[in-house]
Image 1 (cartoon, rainbow, N blue to C red):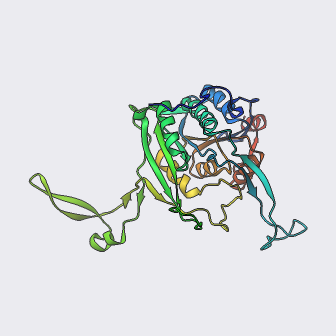
Image 2 (image 1 turned 45 degrees about the horizontal axis):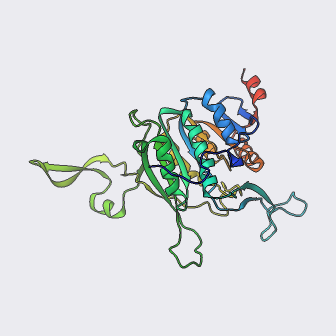
Image 3 (image 1 turned 180 degrees about the horizontal axis):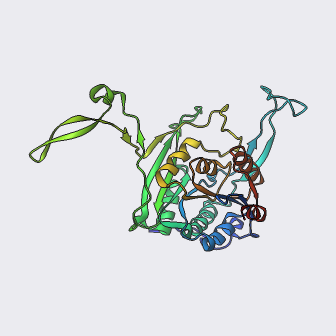
Length: 332
């Protein structure tokens, strides 16, 4: 089964046309790098230099909203040196353009990038594409074509609470994360994560690990052991809150995702020292969390706001990025 639309596979979308080779930045340690420019061009080059190196590629592309999204800066005193002022006007800058000719142009651009990132993945690796319910069904079929239906691993529903809107419909309170393995035969990189036990479980069984008591060939009852329970294995519906307006991690970038969401993905799908790639870097959440968890990181974006936001965020955590030639000289 395949998707079709007028002009599919043509170079009609300017977003598909490769541009000049992106500018590269890297940490002095060589554990992280950032490519500033068109992600399709960058992925094509990385497919040669980084083939089979990534354990996880996470992409949070535009959501086909049909508008330009702006980053919102922090409000300052009139002389720009004082503290933030409540109610003061906050500076805004265009962060990224999410306007498309039609859905076909959007899928063309996204599909070409998913095809280009596939060679980066190790045999045990995973790709996770983060979309909304408006596009998830189209992207699912598109990824089935590129990776193969047997490589589909899971659909994760990220559920959150938001300020309600007046609409004659159910409130939209979730996004969709589609996970694909690069190989259906190779054992995937996967670490089971656990959630706390439910209050009812604790009241009935306590904190001990449960076990089944089998009599004959049938389970007769449950019991507990003295071994502490790790909790409940994490399912595919995740309750992770949106970033609060006053949270320290908030950068003002319009599509910023919570660190808690990326931490689950990175802890589950990678090991320490593995490479994590984000072709739509945005505010740099993926890179910041990967660095904190001891993973190597690589981000790509053509937005100057994304570049500035991510570099500042990583520098604050002790991972300053320099022009690639300078960092490579420092490392040597």
